[in-house]
Image 1 (cartoon, rainbow, N blue to C red):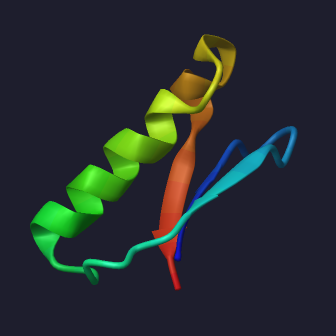
Image 2: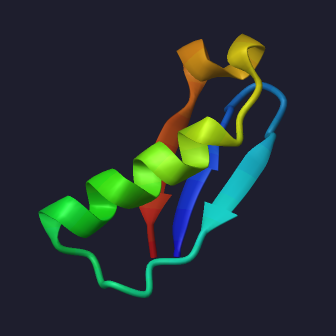
Length: 50
């Protein structure tokens, strides 16, 4: 699972990672998650995988 989180508001989006955690899969997951996030949150987004 890849989580994109805005630290101040704690707004989060979880992205499932069916292809695993290799570099290309992580990039695809980040792109997918960022496409779902409102523009106002994009500057402060952080991410982590678990």
